[in-house]
Length: 92
Image (tube, rainbow, N blue to C red; front, side, top):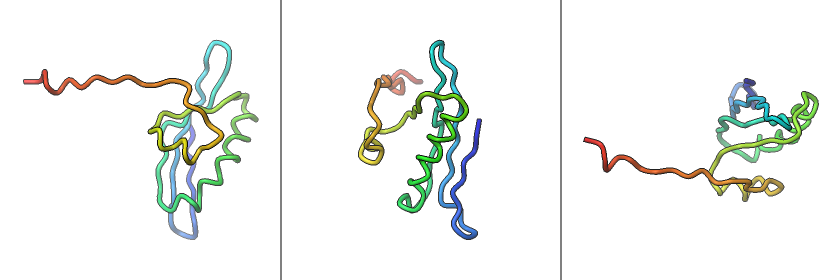
């Protein structure tokens, strides 16, 4: 796994954790977690992450997140959906 940190002066603006995920026919860079403040200051580092991913043999990136990310990551697409089921009504 890799830890990416965006820093301005002495302030941490954002952190991201990635993992190289091997699939049978490809290797992808999976974004495990990403968060921060003042996104406009750090979101432009994504092309650098893409370049790094290609250099280590990844052919794509993937991230699990809310649909709202598609407004920001406009050249990304929703490839699949994650289905969930709430079990709290069955808990004692």
